[in-house]
Length: 195
Image (cartoon, rainbow, N blue to C red; front, side, top):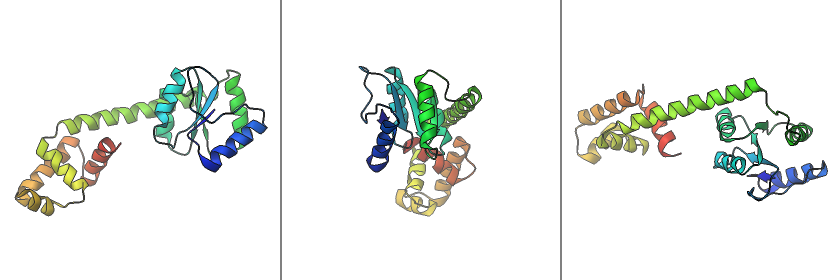
């Protein structure tokens, strides 16, 4: 089963795998059946798809570009391995045969590196979430307005505050988020709010 690949790429992959002896369907995995599901990890919501398919008893393999954080999240969600999209069809077929036979498709050391990277990302996100919770409503408003592209002087004018007061609030935001710059604070904000 192939999940998340659309149009020419998805059709080509289904056709190529079918030609190599695989029975392939391009639908959502259901708990009423089982097999191997390939999930395109570059599609939004792919980690959730991995978790659902894995919990329904499917063997899940992620199709990945270069985003190791997403691969780590997919492994943590239940994928048994991943395959780089730049790989050859012959290598993918070999990997699928190994998975179907119950053989490992990823080295234990690589799995641990991916798990560790995922844990580090999650710990960082948790720390950022806690930092955002520490912001007062006014400080959070400053961050939101900075995200809209406003400068301190624009914020002061909009909120009828002195520029010194706005700068104090912005400095408090930087301190509470442990961000060395407004850009870093905005990166934290965007990663948590615009997920």
